Length: 405
Image 1 (cartoon, rainbow, N blue to C red):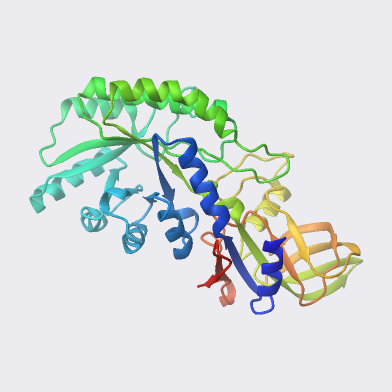
Image 2 (cartoon, helix red, strand yellow):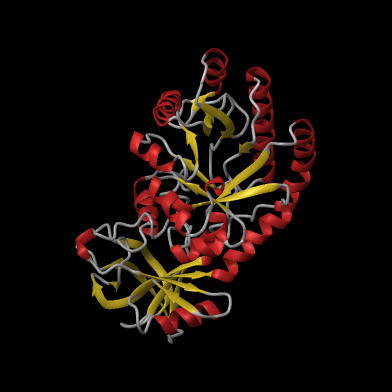
């Protein structure tokens, strides 16, 4: 209720905005650290680029998973040291590599990139330590691996490491990431156990002295009432024996997990003011401020629902998770319910977030709150569409203060 009251009050000044709950974000961050003290955590900066949110997370001792040079720069501006910033992305340019060499741990995404870094290091007369992203020979669930735009196939990398000599580059880490948004502890456990086996195999076949194993993410959040929250205690109990065995054999290898939406997804809210009401052919339309262009994911869910034949279509992260991924909460004064279509103020018929939903009546000037807007929300939305005013981002501090940017 406190969040709803804050949103209702802020809606008097802002027609559309995001509100991020710092207390919830910090609680989620600390929960992972307490549950898995043996693991270092990185925050996936691409899921929410708000500087105040990023700073709050980094203050909890998280490093940065940077997917671009600009994210490397942002993490640096927020006080992270180069060994706390892991720069992993396909298709890096030479200029991006050169700029990031002394600011981050670069993770090469291909053998060609490894060779380019070797040449750059030679030209700069530097010795460089890097990681490599591996496309394992197994899938997330433990079946056969698949072709991917990401990483170097496991066997290709082993063959490369055995045959080619690098004089200026030392490969010190492995990075694997296959999937996001997993809620079953047993599936995640199998995935992590297989990555321990992969790291063993690579070290045994190449003689590399690794300093870290980045196991990617996978840790998901509930989006709807049908979702069960991931059982972290079950994951911990299953994972501890495998971690213990691995650390006994490789005590100098730091274990890393990336998280993004787990920290911020459930702790962000989107608010949109009702700009108009209209009746057409017996249906009521509420015209909201900045829907598709302010928070695109509900509109994408409607688009998928319209064209898919499946009751629950397959997720396509980060654009689409599930059709019922969001709650629409009216913050008006009326208790009378009505059936409405929630649409936006753009000149396109696809600017629709939900059809024929029963809600408490909203008048012009009232506000609608949408949940699960903390991750892959503002960063994905096409704010330039028809040159509308961009939604404001607001952080609700633990102490109740408001930070606007």
